[in-house]
Image 1 (cartoon, rainbow, N blue to C red):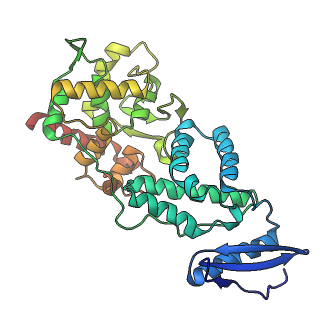
Image 2 (cartoon, rainbow, N blue to C red):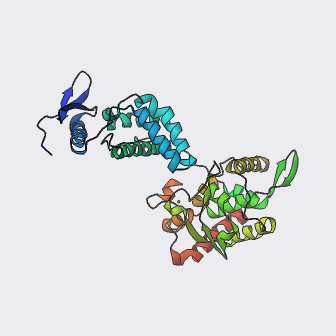
Image 3 (cartoon, rainbow, N blue to C red):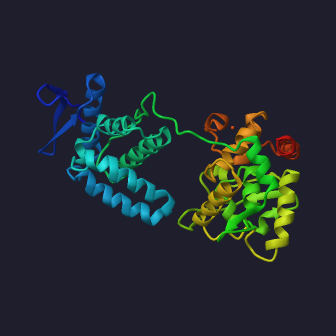
Length: 358
C-alpha cells in the first residue's frame, strides 16, 4: 500500500479530527471526535483500512446496519440473548447514534452513550452489557467491511452503580427447610415447588438450570448440568462455557431429590416446572405467606455463594458455573475433580448448621 502523506486536521468549529484520502480517484473523509493523539490514530486507522481493505457501504446509517445485524442475531442466537439487547439499543444507542453514518462513528460516540446510561443510574452489569453490545456491533461492521472501528478501550465509568444483591438470612433459610406449605385461594396447601426452592439454595443452580434438570442427569450422587430453559421457554446450553458442569451432591441436596422422586419420579423433568415465570410467581407467594424477606429466585443462587464463601474460591467457581475470568466471591463467591466429594461434605456441613441453629 502506498504511504499516505496527508494527516488528520483538527476542525475547531466542529470539534473533531478530519482526514481526507483518495483511492482510485474516489475521495473520502474520515472523522474522530476523540481529542488528542488518540483521535488522530482513529482517523488514520479508518482511512488506512478503507484504502487497504476496500471498505464499502460505510455511508449507511447506524440504525439501518443495526437492523441487518439484529436480523442475523435473531437467526443465530436465542431470544434470551437478543431481546434484552433490543431494549438497550432502543433506549440508548439508537436515539443517540442511530442517524450517524457508520463511517463517522467513533469510539467517543459509543463511550458517550455508555456514560449517559451511567449518569441515568443504570447498574454496572447493564453498562457492561452495553459495552459488549457496542463491541459486537462494531465487529459485525468490520466483518461486513462497513467500518474498521474497534472500540477496545470502551469502559464502564468509575463509580457506576452496583446492583444490590440480596440473600436469605440464616433465619429465612431455616424457615425454608422447616415450612413446606403455601397459600392457594385462601387455603394452606403443600407447595409442590418446595423441592425446587431448597435444591436451588443448596446447589446454587440458576433458575433456568433448575427448570432444565432431568432425572437422567442424576447418576448416584453426581448431578450433570447440561441444559437450561430461559424465560422464553427456549432450551439452551447455559449462560457460558462453564455452565455445562458436574458436581457431587451434598447429602441435604440428595435428600431433597429423594423426596422429589416420590412426587415426580415417573416424569422426565425433576421439578416439573412449566416456565420460569410460573416458578418466580410461586416463589414470591411462598415468601409472602411464610414471612421470608422478598428476594428474587435468582438470589437463592447468591444465597448459596454467600453461605459457602468460607470455602476456597477455586472450589466454588465450577459448582456455580461461573466463567473463568469472573470473580466469584466478588460477584456475590472450580471444583477440582478429586475434591468433589469433600467439597460436597463441606457445603452440607455449612447448611446443616444454618438450618439447625437459626
